[in-house]
Structures are given as C-alpha cells and as structure tokens.
Amino acid sequence: MKFELWTIGKTNFKYLEEGMKIYEKRLSHYLKFSTEIIPNIKNAKNLNPAQLIEKESDIVLKKINTDDLLVVLDEKGKQFSSVQFSKKIENWQLLSQKKVIFLIGGAYGFSDKIYQRANEKIAFSQMTFSHQMIRLFVLEQIYRGMTILRGEPYHNE
Image (tube, rainbow, N blue to C red; front, side):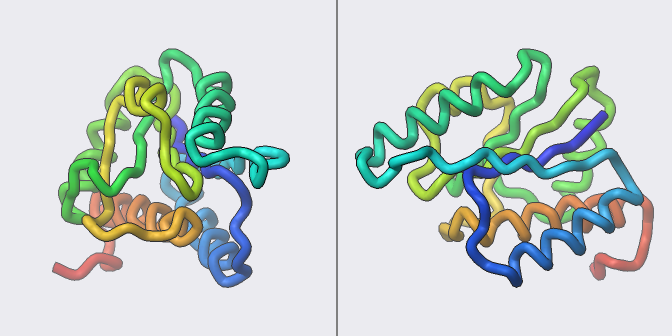
C-alpha cells in the first residue's frame, strides 16, 4: 500500500519545504510515500471562494481512483492522539486499497463533493492551521505513527 499527501499549491516558505523533505526521507524507511502538489488554479484572483473551491475539487476528483482511500484533513474532522493515529495507520495498511491519500485543501477548504467522496475526515486540532503549515504536521504525525508501530524511541509516553 502506498501513502500519499496531496496538497493544493506549493508552499511559499522554504523552512516548511525543508521540514517536509526531512520527514518524507524518514518515511521512506517505513512505507511507500510521496507528495503530490496540485497546481494552483490559474487566474484564481478572478474567482470567488466558492468558484475556487469547486475548481480545486474538480481537479482532485479527476485524479483520484475509485479504490483509493481518501482522508480529508479538516478542523471539523475526528481527532486522535498520536497512539490512536498510529493504530489508524496500521488499520489502513491492512485494507485492500492500493493508496491512502491525505488531502489538504486550499485556503478556503473543500467542496461538498470532496466531503462526500472522503472515506475519513480527520482533524489535527480544533484550531485552524494554514493549509501550508499543516503539511509538515501531517508528515510528522505519519512518521511518529510509524515509529510507534515499530516500538522505536521517537515518541515519548
């Protein structure tokens, strides 16, 4: 099974890119993992938020396969401790799907079409994080989850 992180648009911050590269490299020791950046919509400034969300969602829905497991990152989703999240990762690895896709939306979130397609909706906090910053948090938590599953000393409890 492959795990992927899909994001809308590039990050504007070098420090986030560097942090993401660190965790992507670490994850490669545990599972097949990749990051996919969905390009920003052209002329997005000419669209209202609802139009932008729809266009972003259409691109995502065209790229996703019917047998992919889609995990939407949303502040209204279910929250987990790191240990609980590691168990979730373990359960996903046992499924027949070929891919688990973690989807981080753009600045305005997701359309109803994405929520309807999602298999899971999870939150990393009740707080709202920038759609650029949460990328690093997701990678770190997947890595933490893998070290928990392997009994490695990264996570202290």
